[in-house]
Length: 172
Image (cartoon, rainbow, N blue to C red; front, side):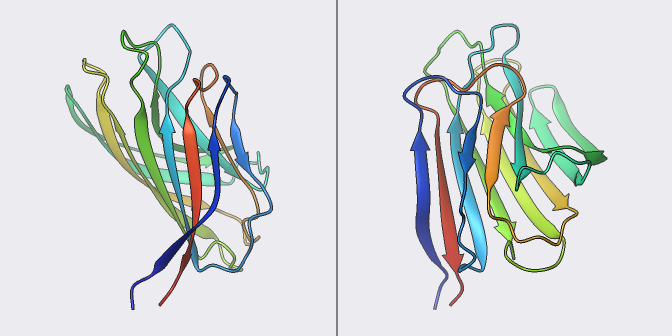
């Protein structure tokens, strides 16, 4: 029997906001999936990093290894001891303010008592030299169960109609 996705919560912004936070996440699922359709309002660049934190943890407990693609070619990156997870880009300051990008974050064994691994996939098509795709493997060095998730752009608030939905996954 295939896994079952159950919506836990959805937020659609009716005004700009500096973050979207999901709290009181129940520990009754095996894994979580977060889907984000985002756009930002910052005016100096075409995109900005999108970040995630678990349980209000701002310590240097996040690490990642990334593979990215853009019109200028592929690139890789990795970093450790970060105070948030970089989960991809959010489109901002585009000529067409109706552009949004999509990020998918899969969080494995989120209620378990081991360090948490998760993957993020983002596609940000700005119709110019800043279009990018990324696949990023993450580690959160904490054995705490995940009970809250905060996402936020690196520069400027999220635009109206940015939407984030958190799903619980039940194994077969």
